[in-house]
Length: 199
Image (cartoon, rainbow, N blue to C red; front, top):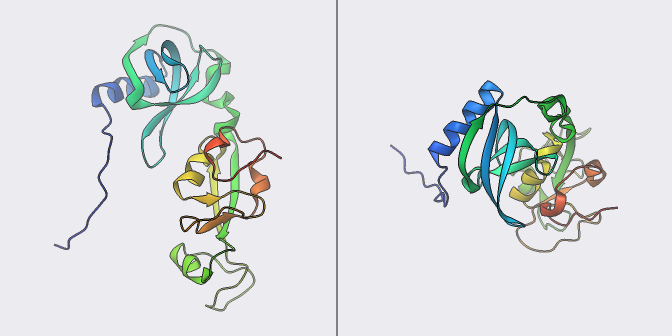
């Protein structure tokens, strides 16, 4: 009986589309779709979906894209007219062949060094002390997160984690810094990771 407010969801997943996609995932089947891409507009594709991914803002499917011959994510609300087709899934199209999906990236997230009171963020995220039993903030406070390489950029963007080498992003939205930014080497789709630059 306590009031609780949640920000409005701006997009609602189309259940008729979701039902076809989840059935294809469950039954290991291929789906023909029309996909509305930001870079290339609408096109017809055959995809081999194997997982649902929620990035905090929208739902995706993780799938092998036969048109581009690679694994990628498709926003569910940009999929139109999905239809399960009779076709054989090849070994290189399976989840086991998706290196980004199967690779686990270990992130060491710490309070952003530019913060005046980093202990507040340490408390906020329940960061563990390294080598200290004190309740006071230390430079060793860290939040260790293991995440699939395929979805690491979503996590980094959602939580505004500064991924620059020298924690150089400015702004009140940057409470966190990725201390071991080198761990992102070889991770795809880092264009949305705040401040990340290829070495």
